[in-house]
Image 1 (tube, rainbow, N blue to C red):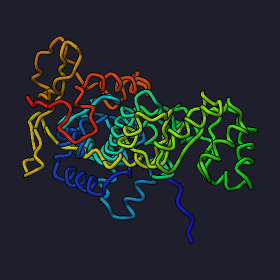
Image 2: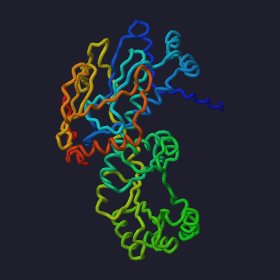
Image 3: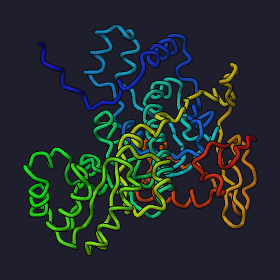
Length: 432
């Protein structure tokens, strides 16, 4: 067996084959340097969704910095005959030198919102299509699902714990997107290191089964982690488990976790039992195949926190945001795809959101950037500069800025826009 090749830190091959064949053809006929504008948008929201949440823009900018065709990438493309020598020479000196605007992370988007606008030569812009879409489609889907769950949970915190249910690096990105969406913590240590997100975790059922008795397992955990830890009480019998947990930890026990069964009924019974045993301040954490609908159904139950895994890292049924990357302008002239069901609107666009004096959002206005409408007193421009002349702008929004932005944006939606039931987008998109 041959030894695996050492991976290059470059992100340049995180792309589709046809991006480079388009580049090669454009270089051959002289059209590669034409000034172009590409836009990322979703024609529609996933079925049943009332809004989308922007996430992934910062990750895209980080990946763009490393989007370089080093010797390793050039050698790979040459060995597999993807493109010829002329194109390889061009790629070897590739550096993005254009401009990028976009909705900041934590902002809401709706059908047609120009979430990202890339202005550069055709050659520079087309090769980054797959990279942009793979990051934004994933992260926006996760953040959108997380926001629905956080809204359903209200003030109760949610722990992201989906690392074992997805690709190992997708798990890190998902933890970040879920944090933007309103989750409180993550179980993923790499996300904690990379993004500064608080991490949480105690034990799994394997730890309980390792010990000869439940009492021995609880005692070992308490000895190491203290009484403020969370004890997993449903490995055997929950009622007996709670009795044992309080006997071992005392009434100062931090929390118990229920990971199976009808968690609403079990949480109610657990609360009564804990109170009867004098552990009135012991919290109840529930997990096990929870999504936004399950969390909403638990709103009236004595649950203090939720653990969510599979549903959030898979977008809770919508694993992609359905965003597309479309050419809308060439040399200052609008161009647009006209095929049935996939029509797009030509010309470089921008957007603003209109609000009532009370702060409630009314509509998303998407307009030709060259002809902006008059900005009303309660209107808010949405895109911000992200890249200028190939350089990432200084002082980009922080992760905490993005969380706060989303909180404000959700508060501005009409009440109907926060429903989990199927329906139209929370506000209409108006095209000028």
